[in-house]
Amino acid sequence: MIHVHVYEKWWIGLTVAMLIAFSLAIGVSGFMMGIQLPSPEALVNPNTVAKQGDFANPGLKELAPKKYVAYIRAEANPWKFRPEKIEVPVGSTVTFYVTAVDVQHGFKLEGTNINVQILPGQVSKMTATFNQKGEFPFVCTEFCGVGHQNMFGKLIVK
Ligand code: CUA
Image (cartoon, rainbow, N blue to C red; front, side):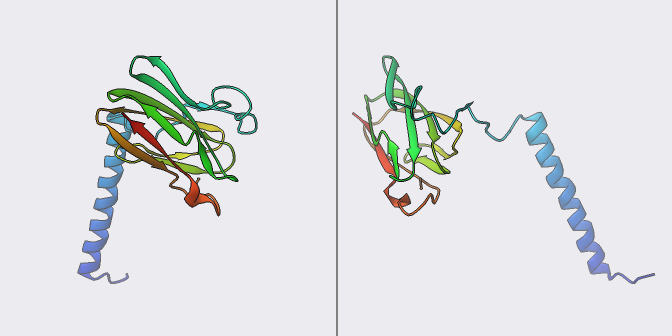
């Protein structure tokens, strides 16, 4: 019979207790509270998304007064978001649909909680309301190539 030191037994016990506690936390949050990883809003063909559909001519579309959707296409070489500039009146609610045509990009909109990965073939959807005038820069947050630092744009609320 191996001799296990009493401190070692405590550590083993503590480790097992933590594993049980964390497993319970994941189970409760996932299955009882419904906290799940975000799933893509839609799937698109990255080879044709720039040629047809809403992302072929990306930009802002007005649904109703102060209610907009913004289709944004991220691409490398040249590294940019299309469009690079969006303007909405103050008090607007904007739903963003963002996709990539080539590699993984990111989309972070300063001053909001919007910060998502943008994957080719998938559409990410986020909504924010802008009650203050100002400029909200958006940047790519995933290193996507040598032109990564050139991927930015801005939303202007006026
Ligand atoms: Cu796109 Cu970094």
